[in-house]
Image (tube, rainbow, N blue to C red; front, side):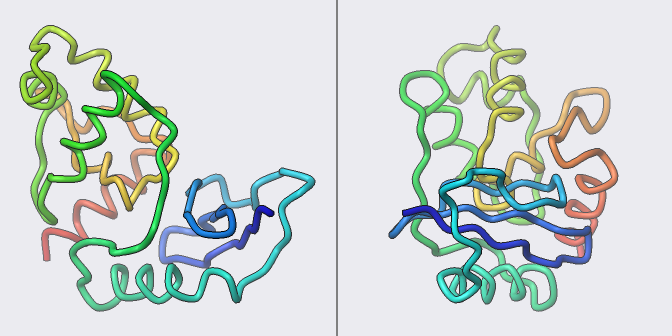
Length: 152
């Protein structure tokens, strides 16, 4: 069974999606996931909501929730490296490409970041371009907010 909840954050609504055991989706689209089979149930998200509250209001530096990523191969390697980016730090797309052993694949790294189903948990907002912020599925205002939150 799938469950959904709209978490009210300082950057607006964040949609959450989980199955019986794992968080499988986080979206800044300000609407709940539109899966007809997902049941809106805040109780199944208590641990996640607590950790999001701690992140936004108390300085939580990483998440210790159970989640699942649907990727293998190159994209999986990118996500493994992204998870290692410390709170309050940024790396470039090209840095991540080098870390996964493919220095010329910085655009593929950017594409992987854009396909991140679990922003915040897998901190793609900490990946920037050499010449600026780069992109973010939640929008650049949200990315700026998150980077500023983590810099304090």
